[in-house]
Length: 378
Ligand SMILES: *Cc1c(COP(=O)(O)O)cnc(C)c1O
Image 1 (tube, rainbow, N blue to C red):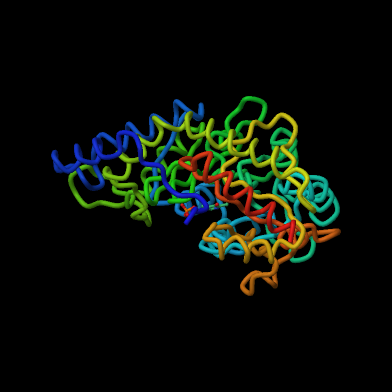
Image 2: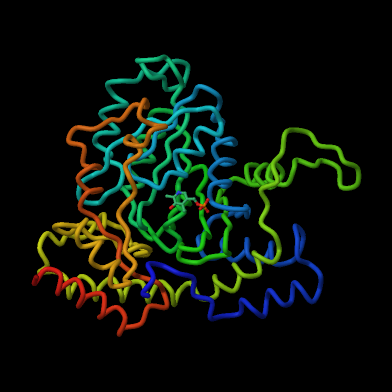
C-alpha cells in the first residue's frame, strides 16, 4: 500500500527516547521538554513556546487565555479539520463560519470584512453581533494545508474590530508569510504533532506566543495550575495538558529533520503539478501572495473526484477527500455560515488528497501518477 501521509522516523528518535528510558525521565518532567520547546522558538522565531498533549489542547488553552468565555463567538473558516471548531465549544462559545476563497482555500477576507462591517457593532471596545448581541471575541485563521491568507490584512481587520487572534497553525509548521513564520502573527499560534502532520510526536502540540506573561500562564494552566513548588496549592482550574518527556524527545529528533522534510514535500508537490497538469479538471490550491508554503498535505481538484478516489483506493493507493465543510456537520448546522457562493461545498466535492509522506520515494510517486493518468484514459 502507498499511504497518504505517514511518520518518517529516520533520525535520532530511538536514541533520544532510549535516553529517556535509560535515565527514567519518561514523564512530565525532563530536559527534552525544554529542548523541544526551544527548538520551536528557534525555528519559528516566536518568543515563547509551550508544549501540549496535542494541537487541540493548544487551541483550547490559547482561546481560554485570549479571554473567550461562555456565549462568545469565535470566527473561523468553514473549511478546516473539525478540531478547530470543536475547541471553540469546549469554552461554551460558538463558532461563526466564513466561507473560503475559491482559489487559495483560506478564509475569504473580503467576506470577513464585509460581515464585520455590516453585521456587527463596536460597543465599549468590544465587537458584538447585531443579530444576537453576543461578543465576537476572537478570530481563528486556519492555515489550511500549509497555505495562509494575507495575514497582514487579517491582523489589521482583527485590530480594527477588537478581536484576539489565535492562529490554527497545526498544518503549517514551515510555512511563512512575508518571511514571518505562521503562528507568530496573532496573540497565539498553535502547532500539532499528530501522526499525519509534517513532524510528529505520535500526538502533541505547541502554543506559540510573543508575550511572556501569556506564555507563563499557558505553562501554568497546562500543568494543573500548581502555584507552590512543594505543597499542593493550585490557584485556578488547571489542565493536565502537558507533553511528556518521551514525546518531546521524539519531537526534538523530528525538528532536526524538518528542513529536509520541507524540501521533500516541495519536490513531491512540483512533480505532481508537472505530471498531472493536463488531467481533466486538475487545479491546485493557489498559493497566496507572499506565502512560502510547507506543502504539508497535497490536495488537488479533479474531475470525477469520487470515482477517482474509489479507483485509487482499490489499487491500494491511499487517498482521501477534503473535510466535510463545518456548516454541513450536524452539530454545527445551526451556527452562522457567512457565504455568497458556498465555495466550501464546491471545493469539498472536487478535492482529493494524494500520498505525500516525507518518505515517499520517486518510484511510488510515479505509481500514483500513472494510476491517475490511466483512470482518465479509461
Ligand atoms: C491536526 C489539526 C488540529 C488538531 O490537532 P491534534 O494534534 O490532532 O489535536 C486542529 N486543526 C487542524 C486544522 C488540524 O489539521
